[in-house]
Image (cartoon, rainbow, N blue to C red; front, side):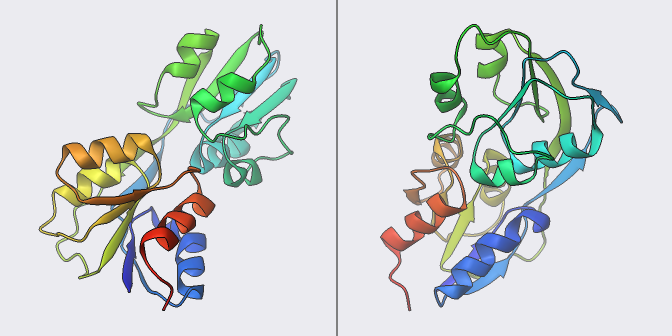
Length: 211
């Protein structure tokens, strides 16, 4: 089966390699790109928790972090790998809700470093400070490859894919992506149970037999 991985190119390598290892023909066809924004330095001194929810947020924070917070929380093992030190908390469920369920209260002074326009649940529930460190820009390539399946890893990718003259069904990384894809009329065949590369791999396996 020919599968398109639509993540930003720097984020697509692991998933593309693992799908290829299963015997699928994989095309990396980015529908989003990451644009750094925000301050050159982020002073985390005095925070009880610093929270990151994505690889890109963790990468940007690692480059700009000054000082040392008491504790760090990361959503997903891949996000944790991008941090300059092992996090103190990686919730079993890789969502903001999953993190809130495991975070002891009161959490104290919290900083959430993430994407411009990120979901506000953590900010609202924890009265956290928020610093946007990147934005996700949609891409609209003139020629998108003919494939049998696309992997969508963000609502932005779903919107970009919906704007194309393409009809391949999709596997989505999580509920926000699935909701946006369904709203736009994309045929979603499966959603990852864990919102990471492992979850996407299992979702693909559920609907596509290995060659």
